Length: 453
Image 1: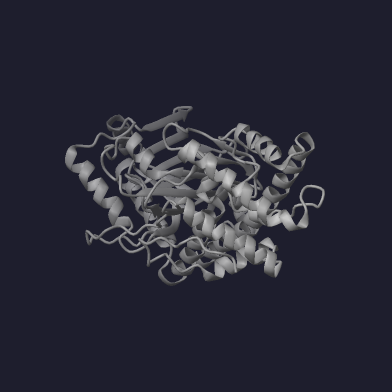
Image 2: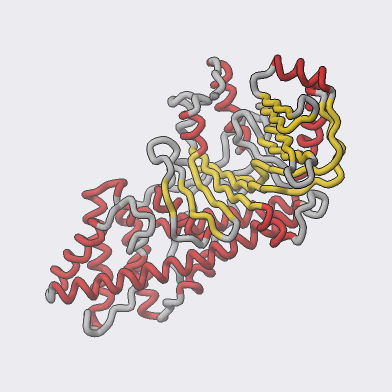
């Protein structure tokens, strides 16, 4: 059930969101952690009975009127405790889920998670009369969250491209477009990936009113590792065998792989676009008519598809047009014609026309921010560096590029490719990544889209 907030709470919630980004544009941390606790459990039956009568969020099931078969305690501050009977040896096993709770924009460090787990077990002992003596505590699930602020809403195609790159999964689905636009990647290799708008979720849950927090947007990328994946990555599931450095290094490797996958996605888009253009030319011999046929297919290709044929306008610069499609002397002119045709559609479709969003450029900037966050965590640790200084929140700035700005850069790219014959996408992405500034602490200004040479 969603908590009801008064007007003061709502204003405080807005300020709390701003405080989360007072020091950094983004932060990496633990959002939800589940553990299995094995060991002796003692019950104070009288205390448990009183506690269960006072609290609706507790379930107690006994068998033979002597032993407990199932107990579940839900707590808004800590999370939940579930005690179940193991049918194989009649022993009791505890499963604990630790949530951040509340507004849930912050994330935790590993030490704060362990402290919260300790406090929850103490709470259960003092209030419910259940004392757990752990002999071992093993991770059951780890949910790692990267949270970042932007000055405006990110196009859903940018989010989908990011999720495809990070999850290495083309099966992207949208759970709820009307509310927070949750994008989910199909479960793959014991990992779950999700990307969503935190501000929209908070407004839907009535944690902040619609008229607040309109100057920033906040997004979260979550990756959930199950027990098998945790053991595979860290050679253990014991909470004392995995430290923050292990988790940070894992996430950094995931982002680096995501950059490689972004390069692959661009190459796939180039090949698909080239093929579609060649098919259009077989239908229409005149270049202008072939271009119209191509764009008709591109526009009719569902705009809500999360794997579009052409990612953005820069793809046209990379095309390796064959001699049977266009003469060598007209290659640059043909690319410019495609770009100008795209500009024409951009004027007609407005913000629904994602090719003008330059989503490959936006995705690379966000991936760079993720890398910066891992380096920041190596110094300051996981979690949100919250500061109540009432300063303007830091955010990643994405300005809309005018038609003339895009034309200048795209035409320069075409000229550079023709002169230097640089067409290796990996080299292009590597150069751009190396030239991008660090924006984890220094932000609130746009990093202009720039030529590759």
